[in-house]
View 1 (spheres, one colour):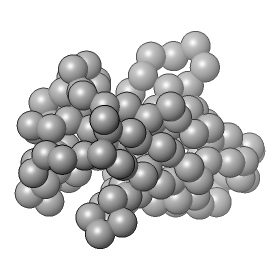
View 2 (view 1 turned 180 degrees about the vertical axis):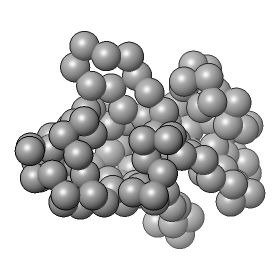
View 3 (view 1 turned 90 degrees about the horizontal axis):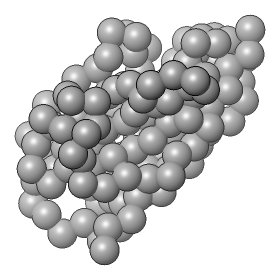
View 4 (view 1 turned 90 degrees about the vertical axis):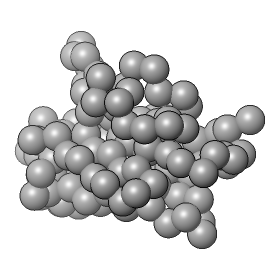
Length: 125
C-alpha cells in the first residue's frame, strides 16, 4: 500500500521561504509522476508543480521562477522549495503520485493514484 506524508508547512512572512517534503512509502512502480497541488480556503484545487521519472518538470505560472520541485529517490522523498512567498500562496499543499504519467496532474489531479493528507502553508503580509 502506498502512503504519502507531507511535512514542512508553517507560517512565514511574505518574502520568506519554505521547503515542503513528501515521504513516499510502499511505491513499487518503475515510472511515476509526482506532483504538488494546493487548495486555498473557498477555492478549487490547483496544480503547483510536477516531476516525472524521465526528469520532466512543469510549473504553474504562479510558481515559475519561485518554486523548485525535486525528488530524492534514495530517500523516497519529493520536495517543493518555495521562495519569495506571497500571501496568495497560503493554502493546504498536497502531494500526489501517478504510476503512469502526468496526464492526471495536468487535469488538475483528477485520476492520480495516491494522495497525501496535506500540510498547511500560511503567508502573512
